[in-house]
Length: 549
Image (cartoon, rainbow, N blue to C red; front, side):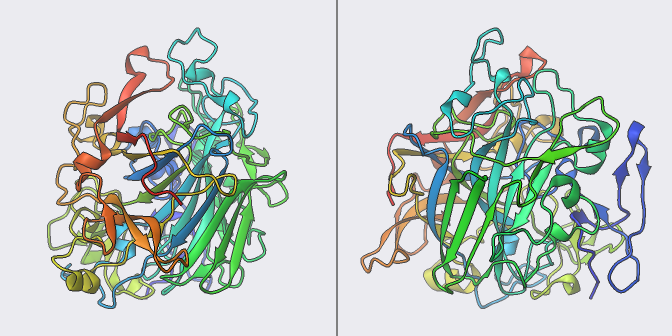
């Protein structure tokens, strides 16, 4: 089995560092045994799979970046809805039958998603759009969504924003990183916060040193730990620098969870910073994390004229008080504040991978441009299949087939070949308040964009399709009944997959076209008035909450 360097990467090859002027340098790191290996460091600008999807590509020299994120949004105009979420959640389990290289076996969670996550908008005074360096936490005074650049509420004058994703990673395949799993058999979780170091009104990015190290979208990253202290420094400059300890799972400190475990996930603000607390009700174990100065969180300074990339200690706090159609991160493709999202479309089968470059050399369906970031079967912690983690830009991988829970011909086939669905309640806020309405949103126009090889004209909506071209299936949210709330009669929960999940009560049209609704056109700040309004999403808002917690 190949020895993996624990670095933030998706593909294998020489470590790539973009030097001033665009020159490319490479080096060979030394790994644990004293041997050497080649690999490529990836940050959000280079297609890192765990990143928040931005309104436009941030790839080096215009390279494609894309993250398919079917999402469920939660709306309430009541204060607290934007900064306080309490979920109850059941982790998916994989079938007993394993996947095989021919694609005729089962489909496991790591083939459907590298992560699913719970999200919330954060203040970051050094992030896009850079009009001001102040942000009042937990306040709807941060709502700036006007379209007149001369008006006081113009979106380009919005306080700097970041997006928090409380991410959960599935077990069973290549070790995270560069793969998707912390363990052969257990789930793990991390608090991640993404910012965007770019002037939203002029388009000017941060300095070259920052672009070379953390990229234009820096990430703070900390695994959820038993004692609430990061096992390594979580700040972006450390996360993206050797020895990459922050992104290397540590079973001695980190909270690992079994498939099928029932959790409560409590996300709220504190004086020290935003906090996540996870209680595993099945195992009795707990973990937490605070995005605080004491825990080593920092923000990357937006200093476009500086020679070096610098940080300063920073406590992240929720941006908004409420959660509505007006509370959004102005640089993100999605339009939400409080939300659940699945990150799909990052696995395709590969029979043989080049261990030096990460490119796929052979698969049964013919090679595509997206067959990158690939691993061989013996790289896996458990399931011996080879595959690629590059963004599935032609929508032909397992996530776009009838491989989801609820898509089998019958219940027996579903249980044999498919994982169970993630189950989760609509979050409560302020301890016991329900959201008044929900929305479905899929950022398909963003990843079908014509300027990156797709057919979608985001200025007009022409050629933007749902389901995406090449997909045999696209997962939908439905409601069902579950006893995970310890109610013997069951309570309403959300689930994701097909229409045949046992206990399903509402499929919201029964397909992705009906559920995610029509194209949504949104306004973004930018130097070119002609391109400020465009579509990145299909979106449908329900004026009620069909699944109260």
